[in-house]
Image 1 (cartoon, rainbow, N blue to C red):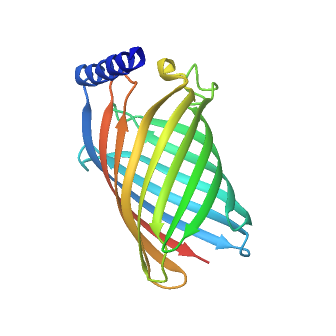
Image 2: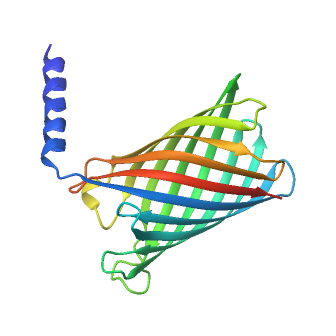
Length: 228
């Protein structure tokens, strides 16, 4: 009985904190171009370019470039290592330059007609290396993502996913170190045009908690993929 009372009190405290925290809603667009070169069925390299809009599609948020490699030692396992260069625009229109390294472990399981994947990502990032007093202090996160898609031989492949971000260490918001503070549920589809070309469309919500100024972002995403 005591545990039930504690659970109810914790839930009330959480809801109360959410109600008193000022939430900042926004809508944006994420557009991505991906180029993948496959050396064989196990090893590939990838180049991504992404452009994001914010403030209800009216302002540039950021550009980023990914350069990475992926290795699939087994059908159920994939490993990927990626470098990301980011140019993020601040409110005063200045640019924050960021460098990020990401290591992904992806597990896959098929149960026809569905296929599920679980990705754990470890990432470290340096922001404003030459212009900030803390620019040489790395920030660390862990990001877990679960995705389920309709795995068929058809061109159109719908899917749903959810990602949760855990903050290991972050110099700009140390109060959330050791906490989960962001989720990204999403739904979309990929459409295969031919053997080498495909595009996708998705809707994503970014939800935050455990932060002083939580954001609610509602994103439309488009992506085009070219495989060589």
